[in-house]
Amino acid sequence: MTLPRIFSALAGTLLLLAAAGAHALDFKSVGNAPAILYDAPSIKGGKLFIAPRGMPVEIVLTYGDWVKVRDMSGDLAWTEAKALSARRNVIVRNANAKVRSAADDSAPAVMSADKGVLLELGEAQGTWTKVRHKDGISGYIKSSDIWGI
Picture 1: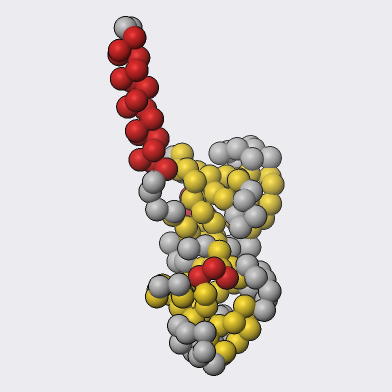
Picture 2 (picture 1 turned 90 degrees about the vertical axis):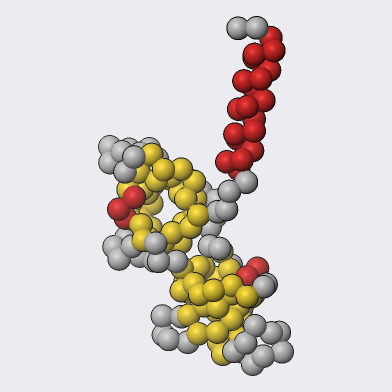
């Protein structure tokens, strides 16, 4: 292979990687049953963790029936794709995060959520996101206070 062809192939590869890195983040949640997270894409791999029902995960890579996921702490693991749901949840990342009746700092708080609380994801409105707690309380939380979007 000539030097210009090598540079051309290298440039093409770099552009492809840059385009892949520019795509939007893809999140899903663990389905109705807890999911086993493995260190490899196989049930013969080492079991790392059991992810609870509803836990949001970021999809990093899909490999056949397996998905490499990242959790809120940044840890990577593999799980079976069938263990995940398209239903979206988020996790509160800050202690005492306020869920408000409207997407406004001056709106009354309808609830206060501690770090680690699971909320169902609604639609985003600027720097705010509509969420719903399992108890039925819904409102708006600052997007910076949650993980999974």
